[in-house]
Length: 219
Image (cartoon, rainbow, N blue to C red):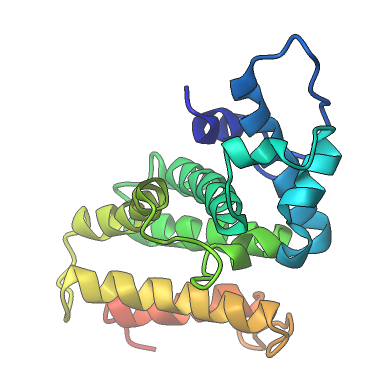
């Protein structure tokens, strides 16, 4: 099992327990510990606080030790982002399991999972889209990104509604709404509010409006 899978099998939100490396541990275990500490720093200090020196210090190893696994800060942040993407993919797939015959509920479950993940762990979510900081061509990241997008596509493909546009366009519309609203919230351009008609949180009401458009419902 690789480090992404191992870390994803743990609690994806609470990976903050410090476990100091001992002389008896295998060298490969150090990579997992460095990733764990990197996630903890990301949660508490943001991406600026995630440095190779800080991760080594918190892991209890020499500052030069991480170089065998992460020669650059980009390599470290890319590996952390891969773990975060894997966790998000796991959560979205789990959320829609059993809802293949209920496309609208499944889309709502998918979106709500993304919203909750971003609002609970904003630093993790924001890291995923920092193209200047991570290598988005990394094969592990590409694989996990595809898992998230494929989960959304699968919902639309299993739906036999007469869509006015193709499935890819609907999927991009849903994802753009989810990511756009999250980004504006996390950047402080929007604040949490309620829709005055439905009395739902704004992000849920926006999703209903989008679904109404996808399924041609009249107001």
